[in-house]
Length: 94
Image 1 (cartoon, rainbow, N blue to C red):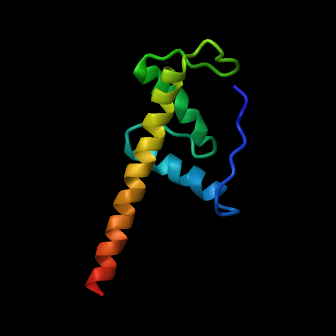
Image 2: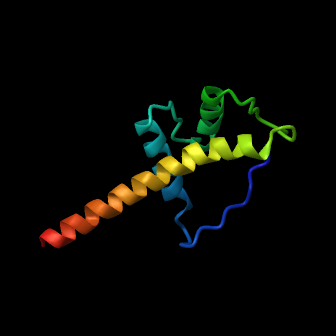
Image 3: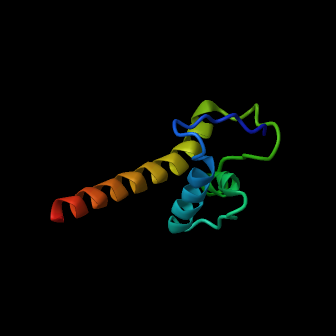
């Protein structure tokens, strides 16, 4: 599968986001290679019963692709919200 071009709002944040993804998915119980955190999508797909393979996945439905990305992105968003709430609670204590 061709890797899509991502543009982050904050220049230079790409490496940090990849590290964050690896940490979050590891916390979710997935085996994540820190050097290739995007590869966790294959493990998620296998768990969901979706036949994702390296290379062309043109036969994959949008719904199936969304289930894979949603599991990963949803976990990341939940963790970001938890971290933000923790930070706000700490600021309120100061």
